[in-house]
Amino acid sequence: MSKDTTAGRAVTFEESVAQLEGIVAAIESGQIGLEESLAKYEQGMELVKRCRGILDRAEKRIEQLTQQGDNLQAEPLDAVRLLEQTGGTKPAGG
Image (cartoon, rainbow, N blue to C red):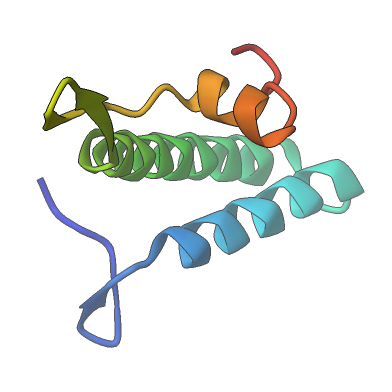
C-alpha cells in the first residue's frame, strides 16, 4: 500500500481534508465534465478512506483515566459522554 506524499513527507489529515474540499467544490461547480467528475469522485473517496483511518487511529489513542477505588484505570474515551459533560453537541449520525 503506497502512501501519498508531498515533497517526500506524508500528507497530513488537514491537507487531505483541504484536497477533499477542493474536489467537492470542483464537482459542485459544474465546470468539469463527466469523466473528470468521476475521476475526482474516486480520488475523493480515497481521501475519505484515508481521513477515516487517521481518525480511527487517533480515537484508539485517546483514553481517559477513571478513578476505580484507589486506582486510576485507563479506558476508551466515550466521545458522546464527554460532549454531554462539557455541554457540547452530539455529532450527526452518532
